[in-house]
Length: 327
Length: 275
Image (cartoon, rainbow over the protein chains, first blue to last red):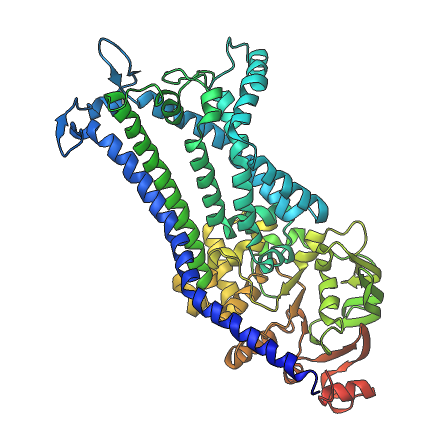
């Protein structure tokens, strides 16, 4: 015993030393974690502030040109901005900034993609959570996550090189870059999000609900349709909204697949242009401080509002689930 | 038999075959069941009589819930279950290939340990089974209302919930939820009601009320009830089956089983010496 006593002592003092360092580090670590938490909020606010500030001169007609001096610039006609289908920003005679066609382009592509992606995504989620077992479930989940990891430019490439000639062959349209093409590509891109969020929602349904349905004689389809869907409806709705958010915000793939021509869509074979693709394609060319430049930022604000409303709705719906669970 | 929805009797689980033992509702013959490699039931042969309340008692893991879940074949939803032997319900082997599991589950209702009303309205919960069995298509709205009222009256819930039939069933108290879970079986006019520790989630007052309800179901239905609670088995059952490690040890009238147990193990269990 007498031999081991010094070891215990030194071990003890070492531990006290570590404890001192930990005590000293603690406030620093806490501060760092606070910073990480707040940084997300700070970055979002900063981006919003910057985008909004850059778009402001188009609305107010006043631009700060440095040194606290303001200059008057041309004001954007907001009625024309929201109602005109003409987007001719670089016209030498009379530039026109109407985003109606662009909004309809975004809308049509997003709606079509959701028409495809929602049934596909919900079906896949039901399969993964209720029917697939053991290994096949794990493999499917990994593959679906992998689908989410494909860069959007690769999706755009597939639309351009694979889907484009296929649409030409099948439909006989002269060009295959249109709403249909972009809608399908965007649908495939939104499916992983819809699947993973709605799968979580379905698996959160207590097993006792399934047993209740089965014991009353429901078959598997009735169990899904009459028990799981009502029980998980908030989560499923949130999944769909997140998918829509993905559709509205996507840029590169739709830039490559829609045909990128300003056009009021009348059928799914029409090429269109979206809000996001317009910013991506034109911001590099626009003269800084120009009306065109400010208007592109204003489009950014419009997109910001769309995304914000959709995310907020999804968030409130998900919160709604928690409130009900606590009842 | 209560007279709910006379229109729907046409598609009931109709038993055929010999009728020599009319007063047995459920009969099992050399029933063995394995979960994977684990044998949960061993050579279970038991006759459960019609129109009485039979209790299944025994320590945890003795197979009483497993046996109960065999009767409506709900065990089969876990893929690794193997069964040998026969279960005859109302003179019909439920493992015969011509038996529709759907119809079987229609004539055998089940109440679970934790009340599990579906997250839809109280009204829709009562009618849920009718919807599954397409029995509600021919019903008018007033017919449906009658069915809901009758079912809820039968479980003594009508006066409490009649003003909020459209609110979510999950907002009820646990006792009310469990009553609702019994009420939703009634429109399908089951012959047998299986109950898996129906009172274990309830407080003393709730237990008393649900026990009284179970009492009132006797005569109209055959009730099989799994319970952990010795006092409850004594109070609420007519016959008791004592199980241990997957085997039936003793099956007799409740009064006899508790006053004069034939097996040493039964005696030890009901005296609380183990389990």
